Length: 109
Image (cartoon, rainbow, N blue to C red; front, side):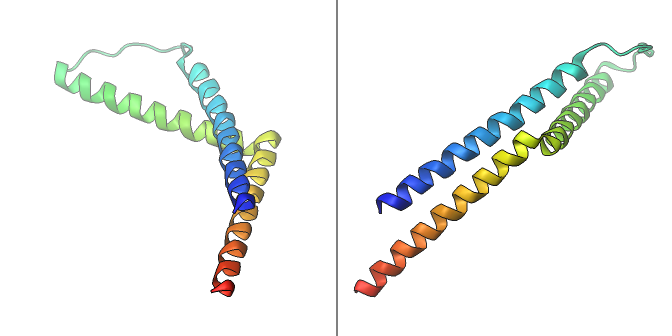
């Protein structure tokens, strides 16, 4: 039981580390996207309601673009790749230990 608990604790730690790395890439992408763009101009304003909808859709689009850009950057980052392998390895170890312990319990009964 102690081995599987330790393995599951390790799984949690590895996935937390992976989450932190992906969040860092996301935040970097957000910061870059927030910088003013060259040649950006304001268009004539439509109705207030339409502007609110357009603004919300624009923010959603930008957020999704930033999230997927960050994910793409994270996937290409060798450190994230290594962390992903560690997290997957920890998950595999924890599952193996858990199933081995469960199998042993069933054999004893």
